Image (cartoon, rainbow, N blue to C red; front, side):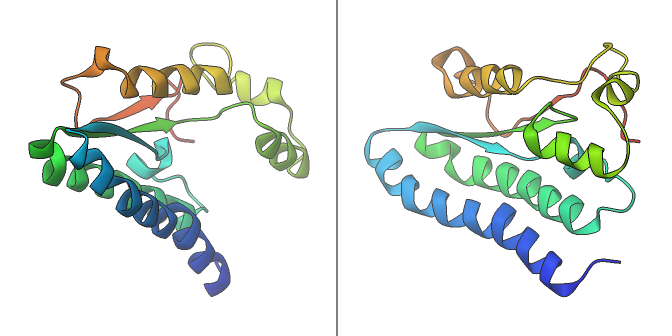
Length: 151
């Protein structure tokens, strides 16, 4: 069961904050002749996981926001993309799995690549999408999951 407070918090943090950040930077990017925005969505925004409706919906909104913004601002040479991580080894993840009585090894076993992701791997993808090497990548939502399907 999702409380209204949890629902609103997920939307505030994952969608509204993103809207306000993009609204703040877009005029300067347009004036500069272009730029790159890389949003953080989630694998669960593309394929929802059971039992996480507020998070799934908010990250699906990030996916739709990314694709919409990309279409609207590509004529201004502003590229908008998103990364869609799966399980990434972070302190928040560690806390969550401990609460469920699981370990990182349990999660590693669920990933065809043999382990969950590292924050620096997501950062490298973000850096690529923000770089000139990704000059024609616009409107993409790139999964980084080690080939793990949503459980």
